Each structure stands twice: as C-alpha cells, then as structure tokens.
Length: 362
Ligand SMILES: *Cc1c(COP(=O)(O)O)cnc(C)c1O
Image (cartoon, rainbow, N blue to C red; front, top):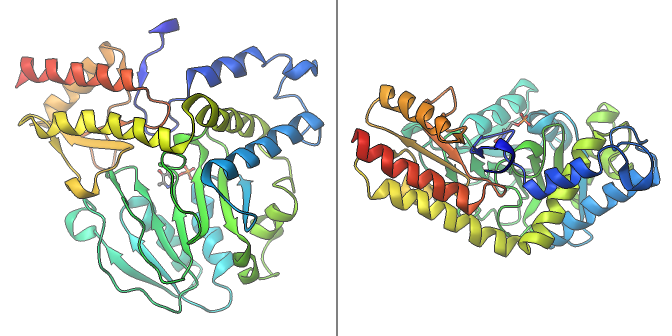
C-alpha cells in the first residue's frame, strides 16, 4: 500500500477515497487561490458558498431529487436527529410508528419516548437478536411517519427494499448506507445520515427533508432544533462545520465523477459484499451472524469458532495491514465495514487473508 496506509475496514469514522484525501491535502494551505486554508475561510465567503451549493446540487443529482426536497447539514450527528424528529414532527399529537432493528433504532425510539410522544413499535427483530429485517407488519394509517434504520451498522442487516407505508412518510436513518445505492426518494419525508460512515469525516449530518414535512413543525421549539431554520438559512443559521462539509462535497464529486453515480456504486458494493459472503458461506470456520436475506452490503458481521480465535484473527489481520475488523463492543465477533471508499482490492486482500487464516487455524 501507498504511504504506509492500511486497508481500512473501520465502521465509522471510516475509510475515505484516497483521491479525496489527496485533493484536500493539496488545497489545504491555500484554498483556490484564497491564500487561506479551507479551515481558515469564512463560512460567509464566496469560497464556502460554492462548496455548500455544490454539495447540495450533487446530492440532489445523485439521488434524483426534485424541488420538493431540501438538502441540509446539521451538527450533532445522527444522534441529534433521534430527538429532533419527534420534536419537529409529532407536535400535532399524531402518533408515529417505529421499526426496531437494532441499537440505533432503539435509541431513536428512546428519544421519542423521553419527550412523551405517542409512538408504537410496529415491528421488531429483537426476538432473534436483531439478526433479520422484519417483514409483513401492520402500520398505523394515521401516523405522522414511519421510522426505520436502513442499515444496521452493528448487527450487519439492511433493508433490501423499503416497507410500503401507503402514503405515510418514511423517515430513515441512512447513516451507514447513504449514497451506497440508488433508491426512490419520493416516499421519504426525511432521510438523515451522519457523515462519518459513507460520505465524509465526522462532524455533520446530512438531512433531506420533503417540503410537506415542514408544515408539521411547530414554532415553539428552539430555533436551532427546527428543520425550518436549516432550510430557510441554507444550513448557515450558525457557523457550520466547514471542513467536514468540504470533504463531503469532494466525496459526492468522487461518487458522481470518478465512480459514475449510484448505479455504478451499487454494482461495486454488491461485488465486494458477494466476495465476502460467498467465502463465509463456503466455510465451516467463518459463520455469518445476519440471516442471509437480511444481510448488509455495508457491514459484514461474522464469527469464528471461538472468541480466542477471533482475537488472534483481528491481531493477525492488522499485522497484514487489514485494520478495523473488530465487531462492535456490544456484540463482539468480527465486522468488515465495506463502505463506498473501501476498494474491491481491499476486499480481495481481506478474502485472501481469511482463506489463509482458515487453512492455518481451521
Ligand atoms: C453510527 C450510527 C449512528 C450514530 O451516529 P452519530 O453521528 O455518532 O450520532 C446512528 N445511526 C446509525 C445507523 C449509525 O450507523
């Protein structure tokens, strides 16, 4: 690997495209002839205006969004969204449905309950340790929204198709698979994604809000917690995290121009995931933890025959320049996060290592 860099399988913050890192490095001290670093320019300058507008335009183009949708940037990570969503959309007394597919869904549910909002857990996969995505569940027709987590970063499951809600707006935490595949945005009232999984460094959450959702938002909530503020101020009510948004803009440009859009991105991601799942399925040594029809294309979770072997595996992988393979601390085991910026050759190197490790330890 170049510059002593390793193959990075971190779950988040995670790998970024090398082209993006290099472009940021090259313009770090003097951004576009401004004589200033991107970390030194004003967020009210024409330079930052261009970054913000380009990021928004690219996000809209990549996802085929029409003028009904607003793209905004909010600090506080995906976690702040867990509390902003019920605060903004449940003031009218309408209830909401939540689908519980793991840790992040559970946290979203908790933040609505803390505020005393009327919510129903319409389906859950907790009965089998969140190893699958629920199918065929009844939804409340009167809900303000149905909340889902599109990809469950910790358990390694993902919605292959989104649930049919018969007109009730979907609200989705897409933190760990945003911009990894194309999808129809029309049924979504709100989409949000913390930047540090698939679109940039930590520090911002990209949100896409559909115009009609703005009508649900009351005036008596704090200004900085209202989506209306972010929409009306083009995400610059206060100082945004300029550097993070700059990298997000470069990543979106990379997806658009270097990869060639989300269809292409999806093809590459499927190829990467298939290599790993095929290896796991053909082995008695590695065991996948997610049910096959619910498997994530972004986070491949697996176990070895013993916890001791897992420890040795993770250490030996690192000695072979393969980093970040430890499972989330709450579940243990192993996890290869193969987001957009993790290359096919990184996954091939991991597969080679896994085969050799099995031969020597199986
Ligand atoms: C990482 C993650 C979060 C938490 O994101 P923060 O930006 O740290 O708040 C929430 N949801 C999902 C699906 C995640 O993967």
